[in-house]
Amino acid sequence: MTEICLETQALSRQFGALAAVQKVDFKLHAGARHALIGPNGAGKTTFVNLLTGVLAPTRGRVLLGGRDITAKAQAERVKLGLARTFQINRLFRGLSVLENVCIAVAERLGAAPSMFYPAGKRVDVIEESMSLLATLKLDDVAGRRVSELPYGRQRLVELAIAIGLRPQALLLDEPAAGVPSAETHIILDAIERLPARIAVLIIEHDMDVVFRFAKRVTVMVGGAVFAEGTPREIEANADVRAVYLGQDGAGAANGRRA
Amino acid sequence: MSDAAIPATPAAAAAWLDHPAARELARRHRLRWWEALPWIAAAVVYFAFPHYLGFGTELVISILFALSLDLALGYAGIITLGHAAFFGTGAYAVGMLAFYGIWTEPITGLLLAALAAAAIGLASGLVLLRTRGLTLLMLTICTMALLEQAANMARDYTGGFDGLPSLPIAPVFGLFAFNPLYPNTQYLFSLAVLLVCFAFLRTLVYSPFGQSLTGIRENILRMHAVGSPVRRRLVICYTISAALAGIAGGLWAQTNAYVNLSVLDLDRAATVLIILILGGYGRLYGAFVGAVIYLALEHFLAQFYPTAWQLGLGLLLVAIALFARNGILGLGEQLWRRWRGRRAAP
Picture 1 (cartoon, each protein chain N blue to C red):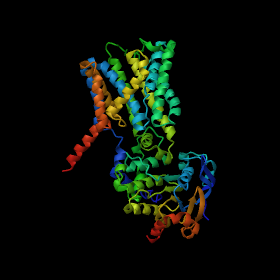
Picture 2 (tube, each protein chain N blue to C red):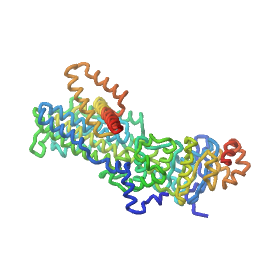
Picture 3 (cartoon, chains in turn orange, brown):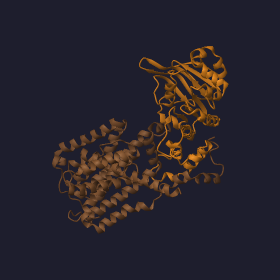
Picture 4 (tube, rainbow over the protein chains, first blue to last red):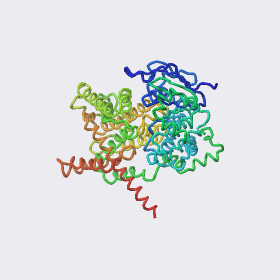
């Protein structure tokens, strides 16, 4: 068994009377390709917000690389190697594609607090951002304003920003959401080519994506972990089929055919 | 992939820097020829229109004040309608120190004004910048109103509603006195202060720090998610912006040789916001264009239509809000790009 990259211990979050996340024990191993699935309202988004520090848990702990980060703010967790993408694009829409990535890289390299020299002098930041864009085949639009790109390529910029942070653990919140099906493959290809050492947790509705990508699947229902296993085990699990795949049987079947 | 992203050879690295987008980014901060224009115009005014130096001084101070607001509002996206709080703090710092004979030297006086305003900016920023949008807007107005009332009530120190008249300001470098009839010194001194502050601000907005402020303006949630200490950046930005506004206020008190409650009121805060929106925010030179147009309108329209000049200003603002969201400078940039595009097309 490889070492554990990201872990939660009895993580819970209560919204008034609603237990959005209940005692979740979860382990993401180094270099993992892990999917988190579940019906709407299962608490996936709350769980991600607890992992990234957007929300504070009511009880329980979050550990990154064995270190307790429960009390750390979002930005500190990023510095420690936990990056995410958003379900809905959160980009610097008025800036160029290159600048979008540069802002993240500058932040990681510790350049961002500097006030007394031009950002253009940090060639290391620009260089790294450009070559990262090239690996995602975005170099041809590097100078374009990000809001001018088609949505699918904007999703790639979202991914580029996260990779530019060189995370140990990367959370992808529905990476293909909102992307026209003709463009989905560019996102999936990019995810497939992520560096092997990064532990990836993908939160997804689309079974197509899950079964193509994940080595391990966790199913959340009603705020708690309902089942965990390999994609094959999850597919074969009658309970999971009943509560989750059953609702969406047609979609799952399509996924396997594709 | 990101491991492979480290260029294998220096040649490969240089190739990425040759990409047009990378080149554009690496050269953005360079001075362009037209950036000399405002300073040439300022020199022309000095020699050709000696009767307008008083007006010129007011203009220079307005530009500096608008620039300070541009840093907070235009670059970092801090919505504020209370920036006169810092202008006024600077003005009262200079005014009270001079009036009571504690400190009359103008250059260090401006530094003290900057310090006082920065202190208020830091203290209020630490509280205010936890909020956003309309809440923030209201709180900035409240801060300013509180300071104005404090200045009004502390009559024994601030002169209350009447303010402090006839401030004794020492000559610049001990040589050049401020003469109310011939404001040459006022004009040149203000211009020099503007140049220094502008050089600082220009460096700041093109720096990595400035870039991160733009990031906060464009998407604050994403900035949190790239590991940026957003609140700290905003507080630092707000404090610097306050210090610059304080310098503008200090200059105002020195060149007018008095200070009164008008330096702290909503009217002044609204005026500077109008100037910035007129000229175009988030682009440095918007402050110059906006101040020139606003003050020219105020000065000349008011001569012809003393009762109704604000109607003209109002109509202009409506036109700007409807047709040129990025201000007059933004409109100019748009037209320039279209013209170049058309020339490049055939």
